[in-house]
Length: 365
Image 1 (cartoon, rainbow, N blue to C red):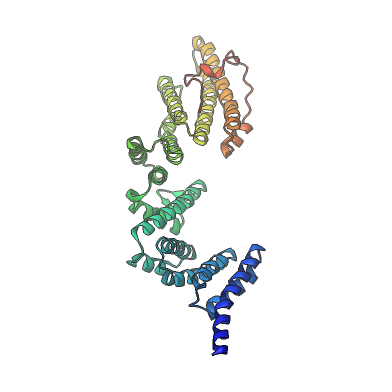
Image 2 (cartoon, helix red, strand yellow):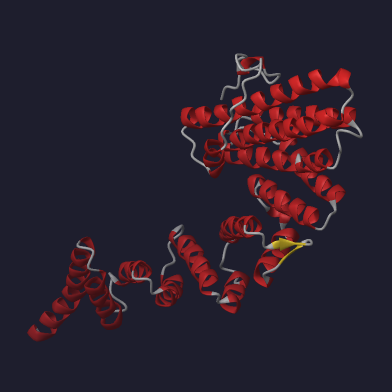
């Protein structure tokens, strides 16, 4: 009886000792040694009081040690062992994320079909997955991977189709980001009308929303509205001033007001992009007018030269504003770098005019 009691006490103490030793090693960032203790605990004492905690710590230790397959296996065990409300949902979500990252599509599909996986967990997982896919698609689009309405990479195209078929279930900021990409896909296939329809539908959802001031939603909406201006930018570039100066000037004014509206949405990163677009538009128009002066009637030359100089100066002033406002708003983006690289040297009569005289008025966020 004595030895039976001693053995029972030793059996009870051993897992505690192993768990304590593992914690000590983990605090010293010695995850290898920490893993050894945890592995011994779950192997030799799988039904001890410490086993659930050990399995949890073991899974996290495997993740920190970049052994994601092992971590997924442990989370699968934990999902069966841990029935505490709240904790099981966290385990299920973490396992879903790991299986997705490992490309275990069959296991992922099977787990999502299990009745014990709550709808809230599935919704959380889908939203997280949607954000990861969106970031991937946005990067691919910037890298020129979108051509003639499709992504060159089959995986990216499959991701696009997945979000397209589930777009109504997306959170508003994600839906706006996807609408922007979908519109760009139509534009890449020269379907500007379809692109504009998609962008406008997304903006209508934003305008009807009660979450307009949410920073993420606000930025997504501002970026979508700015992307929509590309339709009119294409029209502007397609008009020859010498053949239809009035129309060119009309579209210029329309784009200026468009960019002003985007700035008015008060999303700092996108406002800077809109300011730079306005600057480049004015500089581009200035150059076109300068070239057109030589073919203009003598009576118009002086006026056209002055307008060209004024546009150049306005562009230079706006470029300067991008740099100054980026500093004030503490925003660093590629747009700021581009603005700094553009140097204005115009010395026209507008040089002393303040930016407050610009039709947008003072820009404050």
